[in-house]
Length: 438
Image (cartoon, rainbow, N blue to C red):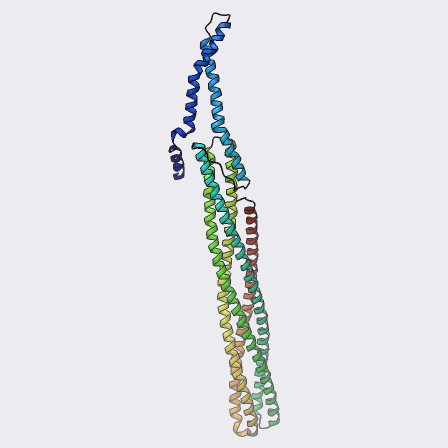
């Protein structure tokens, strides 16, 4: 409403002597003043040749007055309005075809000239808007490429983590099997300890087997520790990639805010085009402005669609980053637990080796050490049971981590597809903008 009032105030502020209305009234009055002389001149000749004794001067004067006024009004309308409106229509058609380089020539100070100035301003604003939109779309395209690279890095890191997790899972299963074997052997050791007085040779052989099992278990445990270190490094890579994705998401969000403002400006320009179309008295000119308004509206819709897709991509990226960060923290805790278990296992294996050495010595002192050996075996069996329980917990955590990795991979792939779609939309928008001549 304020813009319409402003437009009317511009029209009313024109100097009346420069307006089309003043020119129209002036030339009409001049034509009216000249009509009697022309009618009187023609009337003289008509009366000379008239065979009837009728004064037809009044009829001739009226007829001539109508003819002259019609001719004058027709010339005025064509000269002052129609020819200049035709220029506006041709200019509007050029703008509708995407030519934003040309401008209307301003050589008068009447209402049509004022309309031409406003149209030139509208085209200037549209050209600036197209330039700004082009820069924003190019920036969106560049950031989309960066996000694609980041998602590729995350995919590779997750793939490496999955492989490491599978290797750790196999190692933990082997450890679990060794623990079960060790538990069984210590159960046998306990039985042998009860009858060690009668079978010292069997006890010595058994302790040798236990020593070998402990050595193998310790080697496997060392492999697990190495796998855990590699897994920890892989999670560091995931965390770095997550931070990169988060930064790119914030950059895209800033761009969407800029593009959103551009879309709002585009809508305002479309409204201005409709208002300018409503001001004109020519259907052809109105259609020309209508085409301009339609092109602006289409550009606004394309921009709005791109904004919506960008926002969806940003929300998906943020959600997956948050999930990945949370689960990465959980997996880090699992890794710490695994390290604690591995350290405990190493201590236990060393303890077992020491105890086996003690058993070898105890075999030489059967009577004095038999009870102590039995108690030690029971403690070791209890510890092995505890380790077995922790190993089961670790295996369950690894399975959950593997499932999480699969879900994260799927989510990252979806993000990559969304970014690809965003890139395609940005390319299409750039192609449309490049067709415009600025």
